Length: 355
Ligand code: SAH
Ligand code: SF4
Image 1 (cartoon, rainbow, N blue to C red):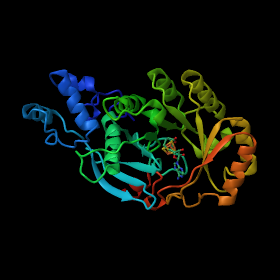
Image 2 (image 1 turned 90 degrees about the vertical axis):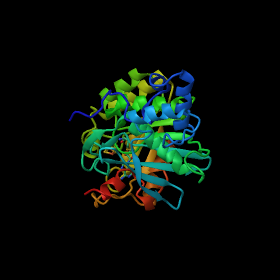
Image 3 (image 1 turned 30 degrees about the horizontal axis):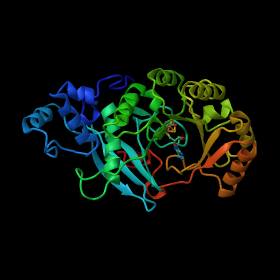
Image 4 (image 1 turned 180 degrees about the vertical axis):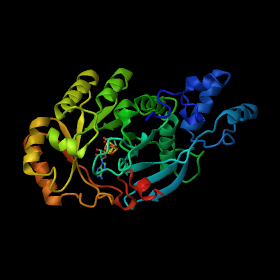
């Protein structure tokens, strides 16, 4: 498959343009920054909203490209405050993104592909393979839609709530779409815009080696989470069939290199599947691999309708698994499930609406 837009420009919407790129369309440069701030700080969804920008300029821009290319098709608000959006893209494809409020944090969970080619056996995003890569502007727009969802009710051009974190843990394998991912993240990091520092952004990956090299070369220094899910090569091949990585040892090596280059610790993610990777011996093997002081996130599996045989372990099993790791000195977090009532594990909503 030739992913649409690999390395392509982001010129599908104003939201996908950096200040520099807007400067090439708009004169004088301060006007470009004004327009950029309308999109990324004040949350304008239309040119009409940009009342202090000259009308002729607004009309000229409107003739070239929309402010945002996508639209929100469905909004699901969970009782725990989680908001899940189904976003319609200009070609009719759909992706999901989720806002997760927790105390003072407002975390945006965003997608990087329509579908996913890795095919993890427990994941709704990968159940039907990959359709295409998202463009940078489509990635940025999810962040903007989620911020709107977090905003107070006085409308899109009213004061915007601040997002505090971004996790790239939605649909798709981010390291199969590095160019667009990096482009999008640089836009949301712009201090004149959404202004999210690298420490507030986490990219989660199944660990394709080539994509990892590209990410390293890009200079982006975000937090990295590696989806391990298995302590042995044989089990990992079964659970992550097209991971694009040689071995578990390669993933450990990847974590080491990320730490050495960026100074950032890597978190390993481990989805717990009842009766499959949740035995004591799996916990002990994982503890040996990770070693003391490493971060491991345990995620009890969210049930998915397409794989009825796979289930989360009982809570006692999760607690026991966690205890073995903790006793071995691993820094372990057992993730609380959130937004179950809105199918918050990404991919489920799109799958359930599939024709
Ligand atoms: N493709 C990347 C990022 C998106 S998936 C990756 O795999 O890391 C983000 C996380 O959600 C991964 O750790 C993945 O294993 C987890 N996940 C996917 N399906 C799940 C499910 N049914 N239950 C719990 N976690 C799931
Ligand atoms: Fe793709 Fe991540 Fe889902 Fe695996 S868990 S199929 S890599 S989105």
